[in-house]
Image 1 (cartoon, rainbow, N blue to C red):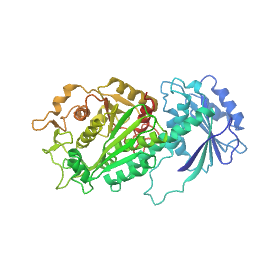
Image 2: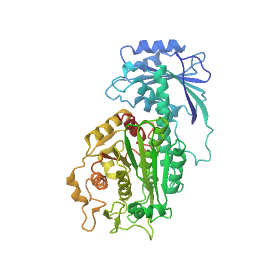
Image 3: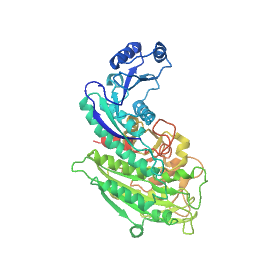
Image 4: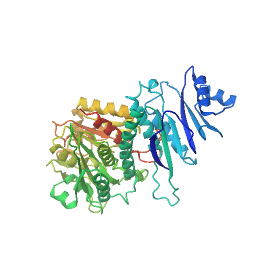
Length: 496
């Protein structure tokens, strides 16, 4: 795609060689006048039919190539502020638009940022509106083609942005910090599991985060054994690739709160002895998307110099069938001293998270948030577009929900009522790792709750749906999405 460079363009769009310009027109009773003003400004011409089609209710976008125009390509996009308009509009639009420009011989993209006056009901600030534009361009520029032999040479594209300089400067720096984390998370989740096994995940995380001044500690299989991380040992022992337990620590000089992020790091999930069907199993390379989101968030937080102490904890394993594998009927002793009856080896993520949540609780943070592609049941409940929140802390639930509404990485709260505890009751151990046919996302969350200090605010985010590719918008198709980085960054940024 493109090697992007963002810059403040100035007061008004000027003539630049090899440029495409984007102008927005609000659909209202002045649409015709706004279109005429835009055409005059760019010295561009349309036929009567083109104008008529654009002004009609069905009209949406014009692409005008013109010799002698202010831009070689003028893109005029009509915005309809109807009930269907969301704060993801610009992110989605620019992601799709940039992808459509990949074969154009462009050196410059010029964007007249729209007036905040029309959108103040949708965005928390003008800066965030601008940020969503920049995020969209970066997300639309993403591809994962490192293993293709016919990769095209990356072209340089300068993105010239025209808007309030003060807000624009802050939007560029914030967006780039956030997107760096999202793209790192996407790269990790899109890697094949033959490359990204637990020790390689640890290696890449250390390389990326140590460079930002984040302390990284990695427990190998021997240290995992010494620490009695029984859940990690049990799930990881079936694979020839040994497990890792990874801890990150970001501690700025000035910080208000201490938050621990825990990410499920199953680098491939075959289901173990309770093996999965072959259909769709290739996606299980991304069963470490929770871990990827934690790594990406840590990177973004450091680059944006967020004033919050963050500890990241990742149990990293491969869940593979072999003669050494954990089996149904086994009893696993975790680091907390609590025991787990294994009813299904494909419910492995919660077993490794038991050790991670116990470790996190000992650090006595202000909050613990875990992210995991934990259950298909959550996808059944909420679909592919939304992650589930499970917590008994109303403030934490509200803060995470609001962060998701701002970023369009949306979260929806599901119950964590104690009635569901009876479904994971075991006759031979403290708890059972599955709870039957119904309410699987809830019983999985109840299982995790068993390993968290009840005095610490805790939320579990089941991201099984939105971490995977979907047709939600222009930037969620084809590749693993890196879901979780933007919403966590927003939540952490807003902490008081």
